Image (cartoon, rainbow, N blue to C red; front, side, top):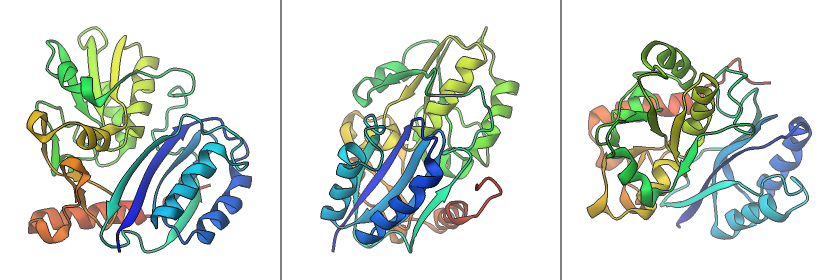
Length: 270
């Protein structure tokens, strides 16, 4: 059986996010979906898997249903497939942030960097004076990244603030292009840099997943595999599933680390 996987997020005002948890959980249970969904006042972030019909029903509910009342009209939604169910259970959790940075000034609903489509990304990152930043964790970068990208060497996204304060200078770094797996981390990082006075900040719309889906391998500047936080481990060009059986022992260790990060309960839960 082939499962359909949906990765989604949107920064949107959800002051009633606590009340949304149980209706959303019950809806997903009714569709036999598994995966993880985070709800916060600033929006929604998740990856779930199920049958094609179930995932399509969830996508329709997000866009047209009464549960969110049209507030997810700009949902960043990407689909891929899995040969086996990539999640063990369903979790719908309340969070202070849907991606944790810890900077109240970084509000993507107020200001955000310039979105760059996958088709235009190569031109941007090869342009002179463009600093290309990978905003993911170090173990993710170790599995694959774009040619010439800077690895901040962070163990969690919350450490990006420290990296930016120590290594980035608005006067020196005039043009910054950032990317992450699905777009959410670099979108929030762009809001952080704009709040700190950086003038020209860009980020890859839809993240690495959208790039691998749309850009032909022959034209790609991506090298390696894209780590994903589920049992598929990594995806390649065309979002084809690489699977742990195709990865070396070192990468299996990275898989274990990544899955621990995915499943780890933190004090940031509401």
